[in-house]
Image (cartoon, rainbow, N blue to C red; front, side, top):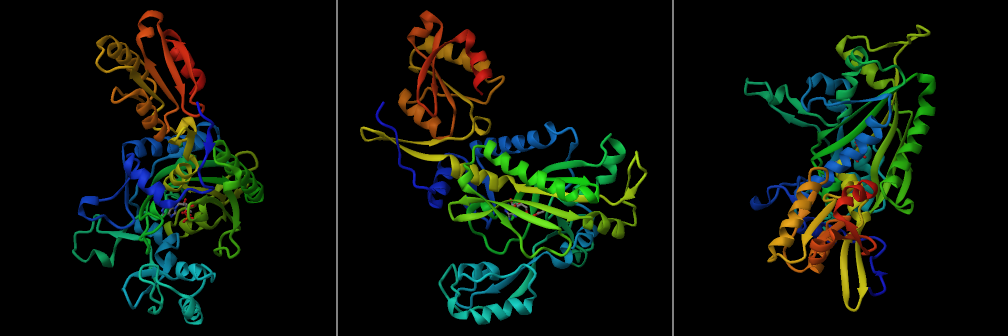
Amino acid sequence: MGDKKKTTPEVVEMEKIVGFAKRRGFVFPSSEIYGGFGAVYDYGPYGAELAKNIREAWWKAMVQQNDNIVGLDSSIFMSPKIWEASGHVGGFSDPLSECKKCHSRVRVDHLLEDAGVFADEKMTEEEINGLLVENKEKLRCPKCGGSDFSQAKNFNLLVQSNLGNFTGDWDKEPTYLRGETCQGIYVNYKNVLDSTRVKVPFGIAQVGKAFRNEITARQFIFRKREFEQMEMQMFVHPDDAMDMYEKWRERRWQYYLDLGIKEENLKWHEHENLVFYAKAAWDIEYRFPFGFKELEGIHARGDYDLTQHAKFSGKKLEYRDPKTNEVYVPHIVETSVGVDRTFLAVLTEAYVEEDLGDDKSRTVLKLPKQLSPIKIAVFPLLKNKPKLVEKAREIYDELKMQYMCEFDDNGNVGKRYRRQDEIGTPYCVTVDFDTLETGEVTVRDRDTMEQERVSVDELQDFFTKNL
Ligand code: GAP
């Protein structure tokens, strides 16, 4: 084997990731044969596996490994009152402006950010418009380069629907597709308390789709209109909220390191201008191909959510401590991350182009094994030798009962290795003529490219140890 020299640039370019994701069946633009559908994407065969493994890793770290966190799967549709109580109907909006040259709609805070001007989330329409005028010379339309923009208007991000409304004027009383999954957790807090043995402090975790009418479709799956969140809400005594908050900040940072993300590609970002109810808000940012951007938000939300839902529903959402009898409204510590942003982060982190010397190179996805879409690929050395094919099939049929496996007899073994390297398969098993004599197969490691002989009888043990 030639000298392995890593030629990957510090940060892989976005076009490379987008092209690769499509070519190898990870991410497809939605409705592509109809010209696409803005800011919506589909996961292909390997992408669906990777997304599933991301959800499972998160669920394991939250629900499986903590005896005081339980899971929930609430509906996408909920009473519209929930979105009034949460503040989304009144205040969940982004400032929107139109380029007077090409008529594309742009988010004004992004426009300003691209021009090096910071726009505070809490600014009024008037203040934002003041910034637009002040910085007129610096602003450029990302689509056509134009510099003349209409007045900014706040645009609500909630996605409306006509569910259950048969009057024809549903837009007067719309229902909403949920804008964040955590509201389903808050409104089920009492149900969980009453139906399980949890006691404060306890958490409820949920994975599910959320919808936002994002103004600008950009940065691939980083900002989608239909996306998936993994949110955990910890219900805590008010006096313990900030300690709990710090604990979860630490734990979530460590989670990404355990997921194989290099620490130099992570950064903390503190929200300086907090929404009025939040006590603290920090983001974990990842070094995406377009720079450091929010991957996960960790928020101390105080008693705002339960108080609001108690007010709007007329139901008490207090907690009575069974030991002290103290009655209080629990405070909430939230951790919230997107499946899609984790997907983009792990793909960016794992994508490597390796120079193998002698004019040879390979693209390899150095995914942590738990996230790899396919765990083991099984090959017969030659596809026209029935005995080899039969043995390889036998091994494949056994391993696939436990692991996501792929059978491949197409092209030479070198090509098959490259194909599996590209999709991040940690192990390839090859059945050759010696296998028929000795009962041993070649197991090849994705990262080291080293090969070892393992007895077929010991394959299960080998993978139990290594996967
Ligand atoms: N419950 C809190 C909440 O929803 P957020 O910062 O709006 O907070 C949390 O979203 C996380 O959800 C983000 O850190 C990001 O990972 C993901 N997310 C938000 N909007 C997204 C979008 N349009 N596309 C993909 N992921 C998104």
